[in-house]
Image (cartoon, rainbow, N blue to C red):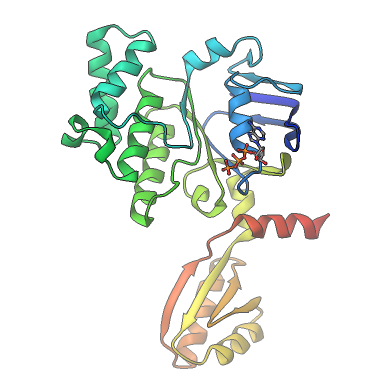
Amino acid sequence: MHILATEGLTKRFPTVTAVDQLTVTVGPGVTGLVGANGAGKSTLIKMLLGLLPPTAGAARVLDMDATTRGAEIRRLVGYMPEHDCLPPDVSATELVVHLARISGLPRTAARERAADVLRHVGLAEERYRAIGGYSTGMKQRVKLAQALVHDPKLVFLDEPTNGLDPRGRDEMLTLIRRIGTEFGISVLVTSHLLGELERVCDHVIVIDAGRLLRSSAIGEFTQVTRTVTVEVDEGTDALAQRLAATGQRVTPHGRMLLVEVQGPGTYDAIRDAAADLDLALIRLEQGRHRIEDVFREEAASV
Ligand SMILES: Nc1ncnc2c1ncn2[C@@H]1O[C@H](COP(=O)(O)OP(=O)(O)OP(=O)(O)O)[C@@H](O)[C@H]1O
């Protein structure tokens, strides 16, 4: 079953083609939409919501045509926009209740539902304070809460981790995963960082300059891009030589080594090599996959 599907979807602005003949399908679960800034992610979402007419091609969301049935789609889909769009002088509770009412919920149900979603996104007492005084993380949570308040079947989250510090980012990613698993709501989440989506997505779509670069289950991504970063206090060269001698693929990266994970044995090989050479391991961590890595691999394979 498809949650959404596009066929040759294209959006041309006077000086740029933002989405270029995109044909892609998305199933239930949490799907990441990855691309550098300007790749066309927000434009795609706006077309899927029926807010922007395509220049060519078609899009279906929850089996409805996005061009002709935008209002129905928006009733069933939650949208967390990328940019700051919150009124500063009202509280999160007032805003979310108001938006729930606009979505058609009766007054009492709107209040209850708003209290529920604000609790789920982790806004407690602060929800009664004016939004203008909120931190970026709190504002992102309010945007998320309003996307969920009308109990959608699907949510589009546009760069939800933007502007967050590492801890806020982690908490937001955990929340997104919960939306997909505990609440059973399908999610399309955009980011310019593939690394952060790996943790929460079942499937990832990569676009570049509006074109589909790749659409794969997350496992396929991690298999081909997985590396482990190794740092030792000294003796990096000796470690690299030892690892290479035991069949590991090693690339020096400044003071660190990037080792391709060929299987669980790779970690054992690193540990044993460091122990044999009497080196102290400072860091042994899963490589963060940046979108550029995928671009490089795709380019190399063409
Ligand atoms: N209304 C518009 N008029 C003209 N050009 C636009 C418009 N909206 C977007 N664009 C252009 O289309 C391209 C894709 O923009 P879009 O916002 O969809 O990218 P994005 O992947 O969401 O990136 P970002 O995260 O930076 O917003 C960019 O070159 C952008 O400048």
